[in-house]
Length: 549
Image 1: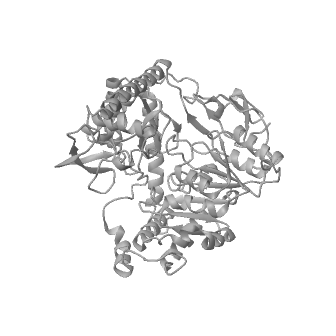
Image 2 (image 1 turned 120 degrees about the vertical axis):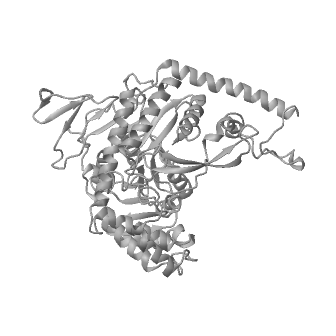
Image 3 (image 1 turned 135 degrees about the horizontal axis):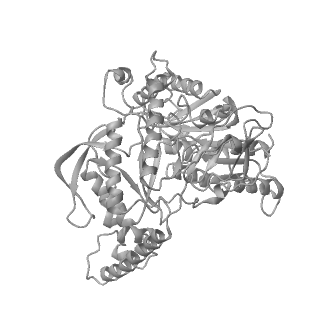
């Protein structure tokens, strides 16, 4: 039977397949037949090569043991604080409210107070330069175990930036190419002082919206001043009570908030799992709404292009096939994928060679590849016209700043080649080259690296909280800035470092980082990879079945 994705999925290290393994054009991967042509569609979908390797058992045991010991000492220190033996620096209820239900006391507050605070110096590091391939970090120290910080006045110069979402290297300090942005500031100023529905729609906004629609090859687009609000304020305008939202379990907080604010029923499917999604779709169609059994008013599937904590790329061909089969709508957040994947940077639709009309609602942000701010919704003209009237962000949110709009226009023209050069295409290609090089070198060193081989978001698993802190501190000492992530942004036992590769990174920079990581992996014993089977086999152990258009 045909698989709608048409691509191979590997668990762990990719392996080669000989021609003898293919019969009549059909190739077997993990027991699933993959065909180059299916359902009468001759489009070729590129293989999905992803890795989610499990950690050795002893690593997980020591990770949970570390959190357990930290929790026990946390309760002991809370007892000492409550007894007045140790000073409490955390937020507490006022004396006159001592009989109220506690406002601050919950597990996350306990975790922040007793575990996160010990390693807090690895987050919120202030920088004092443009977030380019290198940046400058303001040195700070603490005298009370990270409860407060003070600046020393020293600047750590030329730190290699492996944490910013500057995928195309266009978030840089002023040069002559930004002349048009300067001219817009001189003409329009910095702020708009109104919403889009009142007096906040400028000709620059219209120019940008037309360009976004052309870039995505859709009918229309609308831009917003804040990326997070693009999701959280527009989803409630599209669905409401009596509607069903099917959301990937690893969706961004903005998607989660928008879904909750909508009042629609929300059901979660396993990450990138076509079987899990189809089961929910089938049950929704068969059983309808709870109690009344009426048909759902509409069904909306929420996914992301690139998942920012996993580095995985949505299995879009499979999901498009499902949404067509069950007559559902598809809302795709391309915050991280627009500009960073695809032969010309047009995102995952181009990456897989799909028809742009297969996506009902495009969403993306300008904060990553475009080096700016804000977001967009794009798709059919009637969809965009509806949102111009009903979107909370259009009605109540201040319009996008004119120089920000001009920066996006400038970058988008660069990517599209409308500036008369091939610089934009070269940056997209350089990003893809850097991404593959960095990921492959990390895997060969023996680190557990999550995600798709084409994703510029590269999570490296650290697991233990003490190693998270040591990892970030040692690398900063070597003038390498990284982002480390832990609970509640990740599962408790899956703390990680998240690298963001940029087209602005040179081979020398990447080699410097890789050399430091190699030494750090030996020092902290972080090379856990044994090329074992995926920790999430349910993502890939799919039965052979055919989805109809």
